Length: 461
Ligand code: HEC
Ligand code: HEC
Ligand code: HEC
Ligand code: HEC
Image (tube, rainbow, N blue to C red; front, side, top):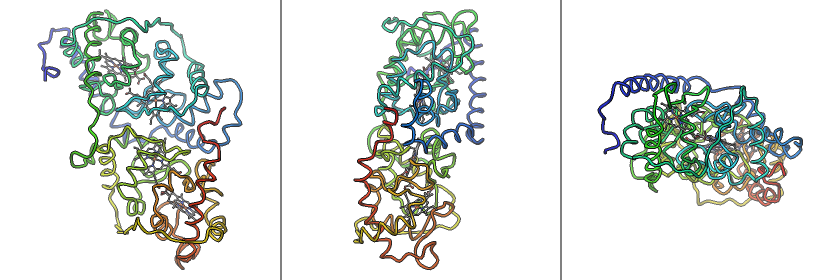
Protein backbone atom coordinates (compact mmCIF):
# COMPACT_ATOMS: atom_id res chain seq x y z
CA UNK A 1 0.00 0.00 0.00
CA UNK A 2 1.30 3.41 -1.01
CA UNK A 3 -0.09 4.77 2.21
CA UNK A 4 2.58 3.23 4.35
CA UNK A 5 5.62 3.52 2.06
CA UNK A 6 8.48 5.05 4.04
CA UNK A 7 9.37 8.31 2.38
CA UNK A 8 12.78 9.87 2.12
CA UNK A 9 12.92 12.43 4.89
CA UNK A 10 14.35 15.93 4.82
CA UNK A 11 16.29 16.89 7.96
CA UNK A 12 13.27 18.89 9.14
CA UNK A 13 11.03 15.90 8.64
CA UNK A 14 13.51 13.63 10.40
CA UNK A 15 13.40 15.90 13.40
CA UNK A 16 9.62 15.89 13.27
CA UNK A 17 9.52 12.14 12.99
CA UNK A 18 11.82 11.59 15.95
CA UNK A 19 9.78 14.02 17.98
CA UNK A 20 6.49 12.41 17.11
CA UNK A 21 7.79 8.92 17.74
CA UNK A 22 9.02 9.98 21.15
CA UNK A 23 5.69 11.62 21.83
CA UNK A 24 3.97 8.52 20.59
CA UNK A 25 5.85 6.33 23.02
CA UNK A 26 5.19 8.73 25.87
CA UNK A 27 1.51 8.76 25.14
CA UNK A 28 1.31 5.04 24.68
CA UNK A 29 2.78 4.85 28.15
CA UNK A 30 0.16 7.30 29.41
CA UNK A 31 -2.50 5.15 27.81
CA UNK A 32 -1.23 1.97 29.46
CA UNK A 33 -0.92 3.71 32.83
CA UNK A 34 -4.43 5.05 32.37
CA UNK A 35 -5.65 1.51 31.77
CA UNK A 36 -4.25 0.12 34.97
CA UNK A 37 -4.86 2.98 37.34
CA UNK A 38 -8.45 3.52 38.37
CA UNK A 39 -10.03 6.19 36.21
CA UNK A 40 -11.15 9.47 37.68
CA UNK A 41 -13.16 8.44 40.70
CA UNK A 42 -14.72 11.83 41.30
CA UNK A 43 -16.21 11.71 37.82
CA UNK A 44 -17.44 8.22 38.40
CA UNK A 45 -19.07 9.05 41.67
CA UNK A 46 -20.56 12.12 40.03
CA UNK A 47 -21.96 9.82 37.39
CA UNK A 48 -23.15 7.29 39.92
CA UNK A 49 -24.94 9.89 41.96
CA UNK A 50 -26.35 11.43 38.81
CA UNK A 51 -27.98 8.26 37.56
CA UNK A 52 -30.55 7.87 40.31
CA UNK A 53 -31.94 11.28 39.36
CA UNK A 54 -33.05 9.89 36.00
CA UNK A 55 -36.69 10.26 36.85
CA UNK A 56 -36.25 12.96 39.48
CA UNK A 57 -34.40 15.09 36.94
CA UNK A 58 -37.68 16.47 35.64
CA UNK A 59 -37.72 18.68 38.73
CA UNK A 60 -34.58 20.51 37.72
CA UNK A 61 -35.34 23.94 36.45
CA UNK A 62 -33.27 27.05 36.12
CA UNK A 63 -30.95 28.58 33.58
CA UNK A 64 -30.15 26.35 30.58
CA UNK A 65 -26.53 25.85 31.64
CA UNK A 66 -27.69 24.36 34.98
CA UNK A 67 -30.09 22.02 33.23
CA UNK A 68 -27.32 21.26 30.73
CA UNK A 69 -24.92 20.41 33.53
CA UNK A 70 -27.36 17.89 34.98
CA UNK A 71 -27.93 16.38 31.53
CA UNK A 72 -24.22 16.25 30.91
CA UNK A 73 -23.67 14.44 34.21
CA UNK A 74 -26.35 11.98 33.23
CA UNK A 75 -25.39 11.21 29.65
CA UNK A 76 -21.85 12.30 28.94
CA UNK A 77 -19.74 12.38 32.12
CA UNK A 78 -18.79 8.70 32.11
CA UNK A 79 -16.63 9.31 29.06
CA UNK A 80 -15.99 13.05 28.88
CA UNK A 81 -15.29 13.20 32.65
CA UNK A 82 -16.31 15.76 35.24
CA UNK A 83 -16.34 19.30 33.93
CA UNK A 84 -16.03 17.89 30.38
CA UNK A 85 -12.26 17.86 30.74
CA UNK A 86 -11.88 14.57 28.87
CA UNK A 87 -9.39 11.78 29.36
CA UNK A 88 -6.76 10.94 26.80
CA UNK A 89 -7.55 7.61 25.14
CA UNK A 90 -11.15 7.63 26.38
CA UNK A 91 -12.88 10.81 25.18
CA UNK A 92 -11.61 14.25 24.19
CA UNK A 93 -11.93 17.39 26.27
CA UNK A 94 -15.00 19.28 25.08
CA UNK A 95 -14.57 22.22 27.44
CA UNK A 96 -11.27 22.96 25.78
CA UNK A 97 -10.73 26.63 24.91
CA UNK A 98 -9.64 25.95 21.37
CA UNK A 99 -12.28 23.32 20.73
CA UNK A 100 -15.05 25.67 21.86
CA UNK A 101 -13.64 28.51 19.78
CA UNK A 102 -13.68 26.34 16.66
CA UNK A 103 -16.72 24.13 17.05
CA UNK A 104 -20.01 25.79 16.10
CA UNK A 105 -23.21 24.84 17.87
CA UNK A 106 -24.20 22.93 14.73
CA UNK A 107 -20.95 20.97 14.83
CA UNK A 108 -21.71 19.86 18.39
CA UNK A 109 -25.37 19.26 17.63
CA UNK A 110 -24.56 17.05 14.63
CA UNK A 111 -21.92 15.16 16.57
CA UNK A 112 -24.47 14.30 19.26
CA UNK A 113 -27.20 13.40 16.77
CA UNK A 114 -25.12 11.17 14.51
CA UNK A 115 -22.29 10.03 16.78
CA UNK A 116 -19.01 8.84 15.32
CA UNK A 117 -19.24 5.36 13.92
CA UNK A 118 -16.17 3.31 14.75
CA UNK A 119 -15.70 5.09 18.10
CA UNK A 120 -17.56 4.94 21.42
CA UNK A 121 -19.24 8.29 20.66
CA UNK A 122 -22.65 6.82 20.02
CA UNK A 123 -25.43 8.61 18.22
CA UNK A 124 -28.01 10.09 20.61
CA UNK A 125 -30.98 10.91 18.39
CA UNK A 126 -33.13 10.38 21.50
CA UNK A 127 -31.91 13.62 23.08
CA UNK A 128 -34.39 16.31 22.05
CA UNK A 129 -33.43 19.71 20.74
CA UNK A 130 -33.75 21.72 23.94
CA UNK A 131 -31.79 19.11 25.87
CA UNK A 132 -28.93 19.44 23.40
CA UNK A 133 -29.23 23.24 23.52
CA UNK A 134 -28.91 23.06 27.32
CA UNK A 135 -25.83 20.83 27.10
CA UNK A 136 -24.19 23.25 24.66
CA UNK A 137 -25.04 26.17 26.97
CA UNK A 138 -23.35 24.27 29.79
CA UNK A 139 -20.20 23.58 27.77
CA UNK A 140 -20.00 27.20 26.68
CA UNK A 141 -20.50 28.42 30.27
CA UNK A 142 -17.48 26.54 31.58
CA UNK A 143 -14.87 28.96 32.69
CA UNK A 144 -12.13 29.22 30.09
CA UNK A 145 -9.09 31.34 30.71
CA UNK A 146 -8.15 33.82 27.99
CA UNK A 147 -10.95 32.86 25.63
CA UNK A 148 -10.06 33.12 21.97
CA UNK A 149 -12.26 33.71 18.96
CA UNK A 150 -11.47 31.98 15.72
CA UNK A 151 -13.42 32.41 12.55
CA UNK A 152 -14.06 29.06 10.87
CA UNK A 153 -15.33 29.00 7.31
CA UNK A 154 -17.80 26.13 7.08
CA UNK A 155 -18.05 26.02 3.29
CA UNK A 156 -14.57 26.74 1.98
CA UNK A 157 -12.77 23.82 0.33
CA UNK A 158 -9.00 23.55 -0.07
CA UNK A 159 -7.23 21.74 -2.86
CA UNK A 160 -4.36 19.47 -1.96
CA UNK A 161 -2.46 16.46 -3.25
CA UNK A 162 -3.72 13.30 -1.59
CA UNK A 163 -0.58 11.27 -2.37
CA UNK A 164 1.73 13.85 -0.82
CA UNK A 165 -0.76 14.23 2.04
CA UNK A 166 -0.60 10.52 2.73
CA UNK A 167 3.15 10.69 3.31
CA UNK A 168 2.89 13.75 5.55
CA UNK A 169 0.00 12.22 7.46
CA UNK A 170 2.05 9.09 8.22
CA UNK A 171 4.90 11.23 9.53
CA UNK A 172 3.12 13.90 11.49
CA UNK A 173 -0.31 12.62 12.40
CA UNK A 174 -0.45 8.80 12.33
CA UNK A 175 1.62 8.36 15.53
CA UNK A 176 -1.22 9.97 17.47
CA UNK A 177 -4.26 9.45 15.23
CA UNK A 178 -3.55 5.91 13.94
CA UNK A 179 -2.30 4.75 10.52
CA UNK A 180 -5.73 5.25 8.97
CA UNK A 181 -6.91 7.98 11.32
CA UNK A 182 -8.99 5.42 13.21
CA UNK A 183 -8.23 7.05 16.58
CA UNK A 184 -8.52 5.34 19.96
CA UNK A 185 -9.36 1.99 18.37
CA UNK A 186 -5.71 1.87 17.23
CA UNK A 187 -4.60 2.44 20.84
CA UNK A 188 -3.37 5.94 20.18
CA UNK A 189 -4.06 9.20 22.01
CA UNK A 190 -5.73 11.15 19.20
CA UNK A 191 -9.31 11.01 17.97
CA UNK A 192 -10.66 9.30 14.84
CA UNK A 193 -10.00 12.06 12.31
CA UNK A 194 -9.99 9.62 9.36
CA UNK A 195 -13.49 8.34 10.17
CA UNK A 196 -16.55 9.50 8.24
CA UNK A 197 -18.39 10.67 11.38
CA UNK A 198 -15.79 13.32 12.08
CA UNK A 199 -15.22 14.24 8.43
CA UNK A 200 -18.92 14.74 7.79
CA UNK A 201 -19.12 17.50 10.44
CA UNK A 202 -15.64 19.05 10.11
CA UNK A 203 -15.09 21.54 7.28
CA UNK A 204 -11.66 21.85 5.64
CA UNK A 205 -11.18 25.13 7.45
CA UNK A 206 -12.05 23.53 10.81
CA UNK A 207 -9.14 21.14 10.26
CA UNK A 208 -6.79 23.91 9.13
CA UNK A 209 -7.67 26.07 12.13
CA UNK A 210 -7.18 23.10 14.50
CA UNK A 211 -3.67 22.67 13.11
CA UNK A 212 -3.01 26.40 13.41
CA UNK A 213 -4.18 26.71 17.01
CA UNK A 214 -3.73 23.22 18.43
CA UNK A 215 -5.75 22.38 21.53
CA UNK A 216 -4.33 23.95 24.60
CA UNK A 217 -3.65 21.46 27.39
CA UNK A 218 -3.94 18.37 25.14
CA UNK A 219 -1.31 16.50 23.11
CA UNK A 220 -2.67 18.29 20.02
CA UNK A 221 -0.14 21.08 19.45
CA UNK A 222 -0.14 23.72 16.71
CA UNK A 223 1.68 22.38 13.66
CA UNK A 224 1.75 25.42 11.44
CA UNK A 225 4.40 28.07 10.93
CA UNK A 226 7.67 28.70 12.71
CA UNK A 227 6.16 28.36 16.20
CA UNK A 228 4.33 25.17 15.28
CA UNK A 229 5.53 21.72 16.26
CA UNK A 230 6.51 20.80 12.70
CA UNK A 231 6.61 24.11 10.86
CA UNK A 232 4.12 22.85 8.29
CA UNK A 233 3.08 25.23 5.53
CA UNK A 234 -0.59 25.71 4.64
CA UNK A 235 -0.09 23.65 1.47
CA UNK A 236 1.14 20.70 3.59
CA UNK A 237 -2.09 20.91 5.54
CA UNK A 238 -4.19 21.05 2.35
CA UNK A 239 -2.45 17.86 1.23
CA UNK A 240 -3.17 16.22 4.58
CA UNK A 241 -6.81 17.31 4.38
CA UNK A 242 -7.06 15.74 0.90
CA UNK A 243 -5.70 12.52 2.37
CA UNK A 244 -8.12 12.63 5.32
CA UNK A 245 -11.06 13.04 2.92
CA UNK A 246 -9.68 10.09 0.95
CA UNK A 247 -9.53 7.99 4.15
CA UNK A 248 -13.12 8.91 5.01
CA UNK A 249 -14.39 7.98 1.55
CA UNK A 250 -12.57 4.65 1.67
CA UNK A 251 -13.59 3.77 5.21
CA UNK A 252 -14.77 0.17 5.33
CA UNK A 253 -16.95 -0.57 8.34
CA UNK A 254 -16.38 -4.00 9.80
CA UNK A 255 -18.21 -6.55 7.69
CA UNK A 256 -21.40 -8.06 9.09
CA UNK A 257 -21.27 -11.43 10.78
CA UNK A 258 -18.47 -13.33 12.43
CA UNK A 259 -15.60 -13.85 10.02
CA UNK A 260 -12.71 -14.90 12.26
CA UNK A 261 -12.06 -16.43 15.64
CA UNK A 262 -12.86 -14.06 18.51
CA UNK A 263 -9.80 -12.28 19.83
CA UNK A 264 -9.77 -11.54 23.58
CA UNK A 265 -6.90 -9.04 23.24
CA UNK A 266 -8.91 -6.93 20.79
CA UNK A 267 -11.89 -7.49 23.05
CA UNK A 268 -10.00 -5.93 25.96
CA UNK A 269 -9.42 -2.71 24.01
CA UNK A 270 -13.00 -2.63 22.76
CA UNK A 271 -14.28 -3.25 26.27
CA UNK A 272 -12.06 -0.54 27.76
CA UNK A 273 -13.26 2.04 25.27
CA UNK A 274 -16.93 1.11 25.02
CA UNK A 275 -18.01 -0.62 28.21
CA UNK A 276 -15.58 0.13 31.06
CA UNK A 277 -16.81 3.71 31.53
CA UNK A 278 -19.93 2.16 33.08
CA UNK A 279 -19.15 -1.49 33.82
CA UNK A 280 -15.76 -0.47 35.26
CA UNK A 281 -12.30 -1.70 34.41
CA UNK A 282 -12.33 -5.48 34.51
CA UNK A 283 -16.14 -5.50 34.23
CA UNK A 284 -16.71 -5.85 37.96
CA UNK A 285 -19.56 -3.34 37.83
CA UNK A 286 -20.67 -0.81 40.38
CA UNK A 287 -23.81 -1.28 42.43
CA UNK A 288 -26.58 1.12 41.50
CA UNK A 289 -24.75 2.15 38.36
CA UNK A 290 -23.99 -0.79 36.06
CA UNK A 291 -24.00 -4.50 36.90
CA UNK A 292 -21.03 -6.82 37.05
CA UNK A 293 -20.78 -8.58 33.69
CA UNK A 294 -17.61 -10.53 34.35
CA UNK A 295 -19.36 -12.33 37.11
CA UNK A 296 -19.13 -16.13 37.29
CA UNK A 297 -22.84 -16.69 37.74
CA UNK A 298 -23.87 -14.14 35.15
CA UNK A 299 -21.54 -15.65 32.57
CA UNK A 300 -22.72 -19.15 33.39
CA UNK A 301 -26.32 -18.35 32.51
CA UNK A 302 -25.99 -15.58 29.91
CA UNK A 303 -25.54 -17.00 26.42
CA UNK A 304 -23.46 -15.17 23.81
CA UNK A 305 -26.71 -14.40 22.08
CA UNK A 306 -28.15 -12.81 25.23
CA UNK A 307 -25.10 -10.54 25.56
CA UNK A 308 -25.02 -9.64 21.86
CA UNK A 309 -28.71 -8.75 21.88
CA UNK A 310 -28.29 -6.66 25.03
CA UNK A 311 -25.46 -4.72 23.39
CA UNK A 312 -27.27 -4.19 20.09
CA UNK A 313 -30.67 -3.37 21.54
CA UNK A 314 -29.67 -1.84 24.87
CA UNK A 315 -32.19 -1.64 27.70
CA UNK A 316 -34.53 1.16 27.03
CA UNK A 317 -34.94 3.61 29.87
CA UNK A 318 -31.66 2.58 31.53
CA UNK A 319 -28.05 3.67 31.12
CA UNK A 320 -27.51 0.63 28.87
CA UNK A 321 -27.73 2.39 25.51
CA UNK A 322 -28.12 0.40 22.30
CA UNK A 323 -24.95 0.03 20.24
CA UNK A 324 -26.16 -1.27 16.87
CA UNK A 325 -22.99 0.19 15.39
CA UNK A 326 -20.76 -2.38 17.12
CA UNK A 327 -20.28 -5.23 14.64
CA UNK A 328 -21.05 -8.82 15.60
CA UNK A 329 -17.34 -9.51 15.36
CA UNK A 330 -16.55 -6.67 17.79
CA UNK A 331 -19.12 -7.98 20.27
CA UNK A 332 -17.74 -11.51 19.85
CA UNK A 333 -14.29 -10.13 20.72
CA UNK A 334 -15.71 -8.40 23.80
CA UNK A 335 -17.48 -11.60 24.88
CA UNK A 336 -14.27 -13.61 24.48
CA UNK A 337 -12.62 -11.08 26.79
CA UNK A 338 -15.46 -11.39 29.32
CA UNK A 339 -15.31 -15.18 29.20
CA UNK A 340 -11.53 -15.22 29.60
CA UNK A 341 -12.03 -14.22 33.25
CA UNK A 342 -10.08 -16.53 35.54
CA UNK A 343 -12.85 -18.37 37.28
CA UNK A 344 -11.85 -20.05 40.52
CA UNK A 345 -14.76 -22.43 40.90
CA UNK A 346 -16.39 -22.86 37.52
CA UNK A 347 -20.03 -23.79 37.37
CA UNK A 348 -22.00 -25.16 34.51
CA UNK A 349 -25.68 -24.30 34.23
CA UNK A 350 -27.87 -25.34 31.34
CA UNK A 351 -30.55 -22.84 30.46
CA UNK A 352 -33.61 -24.06 28.62
CA UNK A 353 -34.68 -21.09 26.61
CA UNK A 354 -37.79 -22.74 25.20
CA UNK A 355 -39.39 -23.61 28.53
CA UNK A 356 -42.08 -21.31 29.92
CA UNK A 357 -43.43 -21.60 33.43
CA UNK A 358 -46.96 -20.87 34.46
CA UNK A 359 -47.44 -19.06 37.72
CA UNK A 360 -50.00 -16.94 39.50
CA UNK A 361 -49.52 -13.22 38.79
CA UNK A 362 -51.38 -12.01 41.88
CA UNK A 363 -49.45 -14.35 44.18
CA UNK A 364 -46.30 -13.31 42.39
CA UNK A 365 -46.97 -9.65 43.00
CA UNK A 366 -47.15 -10.13 46.75
CA UNK A 367 -43.98 -12.19 46.82
CA UNK A 368 -42.20 -9.78 44.53
CA UNK A 369 -43.11 -6.79 46.70
CA UNK A 370 -41.89 -8.67 49.78
CA UNK A 371 -38.63 -10.08 48.50
CA UNK A 372 -37.53 -8.13 45.47
CA UNK A 373 -38.98 -4.63 45.39
CA UNK A 374 -36.58 -3.21 47.97
CA UNK A 375 -33.71 -3.66 45.53
CA UNK A 376 -35.42 -3.74 42.13
CA UNK A 377 -38.26 -1.24 42.68
CA UNK A 378 -42.03 -1.75 42.96
CA UNK A 379 -42.28 -1.89 39.15
CA UNK A 380 -38.79 -3.23 38.47
CA UNK A 381 -37.37 0.23 37.70
CA UNK A 382 -34.07 -0.61 39.42
CA UNK A 383 -31.17 1.77 38.98
CA UNK A 384 -33.33 4.32 37.23
CA UNK A 385 -34.85 5.22 40.59
CA UNK A 386 -31.65 4.89 42.53
CA UNK A 387 -31.96 1.32 43.80
CA UNK A 388 -29.14 -1.22 43.93
CA UNK A 389 -30.78 -3.85 41.67
CA UNK A 390 -31.07 -3.80 37.86
CA UNK A 391 -34.20 -2.77 35.97
CA UNK A 392 -35.79 -6.21 35.70
CA UNK A 393 -39.31 -4.89 35.05
CA UNK A 394 -38.37 -3.26 31.77
CA UNK A 395 -38.98 -4.69 28.34
CA UNK A 396 -35.32 -4.37 27.43
CA UNK A 397 -34.48 -7.04 30.02
CA UNK A 398 -37.60 -9.19 29.79
CA UNK A 399 -37.44 -9.42 25.99
CA UNK A 400 -34.05 -11.11 26.12
CA UNK A 401 -34.33 -13.05 29.40
CA UNK A 402 -36.09 -16.42 29.20
CA UNK A 403 -38.13 -17.75 32.15
CA UNK A 404 -35.38 -20.22 32.91
CA UNK A 405 -32.76 -17.43 32.89
CA UNK A 406 -34.70 -15.66 35.64
CA UNK A 407 -35.29 -18.90 37.52
CA UNK A 408 -31.61 -19.87 37.41
CA UNK A 409 -30.64 -16.37 38.61
CA UNK A 410 -32.92 -16.81 41.62
CA UNK A 411 -31.60 -20.29 42.26
CA UNK A 412 -27.94 -19.42 41.85
CA UNK A 413 -27.70 -15.76 42.88
CA UNK A 414 -24.69 -13.81 41.67
CA UNK A 415 -21.57 -14.43 43.67
CA UNK A 416 -20.01 -11.20 44.95
CA UNK A 417 -23.10 -9.02 44.37
CA UNK A 418 -26.13 -8.23 46.58
CA UNK A 419 -28.13 -10.67 44.45
CA UNK A 420 -28.21 -13.81 46.60
CA UNK A 421 -29.82 -17.15 46.00
CA UNK A 422 -33.46 -17.09 47.10
CA UNK A 423 -34.33 -20.73 46.63
CA UNK A 424 -34.59 -23.51 49.16
CA UNK A 425 -33.42 -23.68 52.72
CA UNK A 426 -29.97 -22.32 51.90
CA UNK A 427 -31.47 -19.43 49.99
CA UNK A 428 -32.04 -15.99 51.43
CA UNK A 429 -35.82 -16.37 51.58
CA UNK A 430 -36.42 -20.11 51.29
CA UNK A 431 -38.65 -19.58 48.27
CA UNK A 432 -40.03 -22.70 46.62
CA UNK A 433 -39.87 -23.35 42.89
CA UNK A 434 -43.57 -22.52 42.56
CA UNK A 435 -43.01 -19.13 44.24
CA UNK A 436 -40.43 -18.22 41.62
CA UNK A 437 -42.87 -19.15 38.86
CA UNK A 438 -45.40 -16.75 40.39
CA UNK A 439 -42.79 -13.99 40.55
CA UNK A 440 -41.82 -14.57 36.91
CA UNK A 441 -45.49 -14.38 35.88
CA UNK A 442 -45.76 -11.06 37.71
CA UNK A 443 -42.52 -9.70 36.17
CA UNK A 444 -43.92 -10.39 32.69
CA UNK A 445 -46.81 -8.02 33.41
CA UNK A 446 -44.50 -5.12 34.25
CA UNK A 447 -43.37 -3.79 30.84
CA UNK A 448 -46.88 -2.57 30.05
CA UNK A 449 -46.78 -0.50 33.26
CA UNK A 450 -43.32 0.77 32.37
CA UNK A 451 -44.45 1.72 28.87
CA UNK A 452 -46.87 4.25 30.26
CA UNK A 453 -44.16 5.70 32.48
CA UNK A 454 -42.23 8.66 31.18
CA UNK A 455 -39.16 7.69 29.15
CA UNK A 456 -36.00 8.54 31.03
CA UNK A 457 -34.59 10.78 28.35
CA UNK A 458 -37.39 13.31 28.15
CA UNK A 459 -36.56 14.37 31.66
CA UNK A 460 -36.21 18.09 31.00
CA UNK A 461 -39.20 18.97 28.91
C1 HEC B 1 -19.17 6.00 25.82
C2 HEC B 1 -18.33 7.16 25.77
C3 HEC B 1 -18.95 8.51 25.36
C4 HEC B 1 -20.11 9.08 25.82
C5 HEC B 1 -21.10 8.52 26.83
C6 HEC B 1 -20.20 10.36 25.15
N1 HEC B 1 -19.13 10.56 24.33
FE1 HEC B 1 -18.75 12.22 23.17
N2 HEC B 1 -17.09 11.35 22.43
C7 HEC B 1 -16.58 10.12 22.82
C8 HEC B 1 -15.41 9.83 22.03
C9 HEC B 1 -14.55 8.58 22.14
C10 HEC B 1 -15.22 10.93 21.15
C11 HEC B 1 -14.12 11.08 20.11
C12 HEC B 1 -14.50 10.25 18.90
C13 HEC B 1 -13.47 10.32 17.82
O1 HEC B 1 -12.48 9.58 17.91
O2 HEC B 1 -13.70 11.10 16.89
C14 HEC B 1 -16.29 11.87 21.43
C15 HEC B 1 -16.45 13.07 20.77
C16 HEC B 1 -17.39 14.04 21.11
C17 HEC B 1 -17.46 15.35 20.53
C18 HEC B 1 -16.56 15.91 19.46
C19 HEC B 1 -15.29 16.43 20.12
C20 HEC B 1 -14.27 16.85 19.14
O3 HEC B 1 -13.11 17.04 19.57
O4 HEC B 1 -14.57 16.99 17.96
C21 HEC B 1 -18.51 16.01 21.14
C22 HEC B 1 -18.98 17.42 20.87
C23 HEC B 1 -19.09 15.07 22.08
N3 HEC B 1 -18.38 13.88 22.04
C24 HEC B 1 -20.16 15.35 22.90
C25 HEC B 1 -20.78 14.42 23.74
C26 HEC B 1 -21.96 14.71 24.52
C27 HEC B 1 -22.67 16.05 24.58
C28 HEC B 1 -22.28 13.55 25.19
C29 HEC B 1 -23.48 13.31 26.08
C30 HEC B 1 -24.76 13.52 25.46
C31 HEC B 1 -21.29 12.55 24.83
N4 HEC B 1 -20.39 13.12 23.96
C32 HEC B 1 -21.25 11.25 25.34
C33 HEC B 1 -17.12 9.26 23.78
C34 HEC B 1 -18.33 9.45 24.43
C1 HEC C 1 1.14 14.16 19.88
C2 HEC C 1 -0.08 13.58 19.42
C3 HEC C 1 -0.78 14.23 18.23
C4 HEC C 1 -0.26 14.49 16.99
C5 HEC C 1 1.17 14.24 16.52
C6 HEC C 1 -1.36 15.01 16.19
N1 HEC C 1 -2.49 15.07 16.95
FE1 HEC C 1 -4.29 15.82 16.32
N2 HEC C 1 -5.06 15.47 18.19
C7 HEC C 1 -4.41 14.86 19.21
C8 HEC C 1 -5.30 14.74 20.32
C9 HEC C 1 -5.00 14.09 21.66
C10 HEC C 1 -6.53 15.34 19.93
C11 HEC C 1 -7.81 15.45 20.75
C12 HEC C 1 -7.64 16.54 21.76
C13 HEC C 1 -8.39 16.19 23.04
O1 HEC C 1 -8.15 15.10 23.59
O2 HEC C 1 -9.17 17.03 23.49
C14 HEC C 1 -6.34 15.80 18.57
C15 HEC C 1 -7.31 16.44 17.83
C16 HEC C 1 -7.21 16.74 16.49
C17 HEC C 1 -8.25 17.30 15.67
C18 HEC C 1 -9.64 17.68 16.14
C19 HEC C 1 -10.51 16.44 16.05
C20 HEC C 1 -11.93 16.63 16.49
O3 HEC C 1 -12.57 15.60 16.78
O4 HEC C 1 -12.42 17.76 16.57
C21 HEC C 1 -7.78 17.39 14.39
C22 HEC C 1 -8.53 17.91 13.18
C23 HEC C 1 -6.42 16.90 14.42
N3 HEC C 1 -6.10 16.52 15.70
C24 HEC C 1 -5.61 16.81 13.31
C25 HEC C 1 -4.28 16.41 13.34
C26 HEC C 1 -3.44 16.34 12.17
C27 HEC C 1 -3.90 16.61 10.75
C28 HEC C 1 -2.20 15.95 12.60
C29 HEC C 1 -0.95 15.82 11.78
C30 HEC C 1 -0.49 17.03 11.17
C31 HEC C 1 -2.29 15.77 14.05
N4 HEC C 1 -3.56 16.04 14.45
C32 HEC C 1 -1.23 15.36 14.85
C33 HEC C 1 -3.08 14.43 19.21
C34 HEC C 1 -2.19 14.59 18.18
C1 HEC D 1 -23.45 4.41 29.79
C2 HEC D 1 -23.30 3.25 30.65
C3 HEC D 1 -23.13 1.87 30.00
C4 HEC D 1 -22.26 1.52 28.99
C5 HEC D 1 -21.28 2.41 28.23
C6 HEC D 1 -22.46 0.10 28.79
N1 HEC D 1 -23.40 -0.38 29.66
FE1 HEC D 1 -24.05 -2.31 29.78
N2 HEC D 1 -25.39 -1.79 31.24
C7 HEC D 1 -25.51 -0.53 31.80
C8 HEC D 1 -26.58 -0.54 32.78
C9 HEC D 1 -27.05 0.65 33.61
C10 HEC D 1 -27.09 -1.86 32.79
C11 HEC D 1 -28.24 -2.39 33.66
C12 HEC D 1 -29.52 -2.10 32.95
C13 HEC D 1 -30.69 -2.57 33.77
O1 HEC D 1 -30.96 -1.96 34.83
O2 HEC D 1 -31.32 -3.54 33.33
C14 HEC D 1 -26.32 -2.61 31.82
C15 HEC D 1 -26.53 -3.96 31.53
C16 HEC D 1 -25.73 -4.72 30.70
C17 HEC D 1 -25.86 -6.14 30.48
C18 HEC D 1 -26.88 -7.04 31.14
C19 HEC D 1 -26.30 -7.50 32.44
C20 HEC D 1 -27.24 -8.36 33.21
O3 HEC D 1 -26.98 -8.54 34.42
O4 HEC D 1 -28.21 -8.84 32.64
C21 HEC D 1 -24.88 -6.53 29.59
C22 HEC D 1 -24.62 -7.93 29.08
C23 HEC D 1 -24.15 -5.34 29.25
N3 HEC D 1 -24.68 -4.26 29.94
C24 HEC D 1 -23.07 -5.33 28.40
C25 HEC D 1 -22.42 -4.17 27.99
C26 HEC D 1 -21.33 -4.16 27.04
C27 HEC D 1 -20.71 -5.40 26.40
C28 HEC D 1 -20.96 -2.84 26.87
C29 HEC D 1 -19.92 -2.29 25.91
C30 HEC D 1 -20.12 -2.61 24.51
C31 HEC D 1 -21.83 -2.04 27.73
N4 HEC D 1 -22.68 -2.88 28.39
C32 HEC D 1 -21.77 -0.66 27.84
C33 HEC D 1 -24.77 0.59 31.47
C34 HEC D 1 -23.82 0.68 30.43
C1 HEC E 1 -30.44 -7.08 48.27
C2 HEC E 1 -30.86 -6.58 47.02
C3 HEC E 1 -31.58 -7.51 46.06
C4 HEC E 1 -32.73 -8.25 46.29
C5 HEC E 1 -33.53 -8.30 47.57
C6 HEC E 1 -33.03 -8.91 45.05
N1 HEC E 1 -32.10 -8.61 44.10
FE1 HEC E 1 -32.06 -9.29 42.19
N2 HEC E 1 -30.32 -8.32 41.86
C7 HEC E 1 -29.71 -7.46 42.74
C8 HEC E 1 -28.50 -6.93 42.13
C9 HEC E 1 -27.53 -5.94 42.76
C10 HEC E 1 -28.42 -7.50 40.84
C11 HEC E 1 -27.33 -7.26 39.78
C12 HEC E 1 -26.14 -8.11 40.12
C13 HEC E 1 -24.93 -7.74 39.30
O1 HEC E 1 -24.32 -6.69 39.57
O2 HEC E 1 -24.61 -8.50 38.39
C14 HEC E 1 -29.58 -8.37 40.71
C15 HEC E 1 -29.86 -9.13 39.58
C16 HEC E 1 -31.04 -9.81 39.35
C17 HEC E 1 -31.41 -10.48 38.12
C18 HEC E 1 -30.56 -10.54 36.87
C19 HEC E 1 -30.88 -9.30 36.05
C20 HEC E 1 -30.09 -9.16 34.79
O3 HEC E 1 -30.06 -8.01 34.31
O4 HEC E 1 -29.52 -10.13 34.30
C21 HEC E 1 -32.66 -11.00 38.29
C22 HEC E 1 -33.48 -11.77 37.26
C23 HEC E 1 -33.07 -10.67 39.64
N3 HEC E 1 -32.06 -9.96 40.26
C24 HEC E 1 -34.28 -11.03 40.18
C25 HEC E 1 -34.62 -10.82 41.52
C26 HEC E 1 -35.86 -11.27 42.10
C27 HEC E 1 -36.99 -11.95 41.34
C28 HEC E 1 -35.81 -10.94 43.41
C29 HEC E 1 -36.83 -11.28 44.50
C30 HEC E 1 -36.99 -12.68 44.72
C31 HEC E 1 -34.55 -10.25 43.66
N4 HEC E 1 -33.86 -10.21 42.47
C32 HEC E 1 -34.14 -9.72 44.87
C33 HEC E 1 -30.12 -7.16 44.02
C34 HEC E 1 -31.20 -7.75 44.67
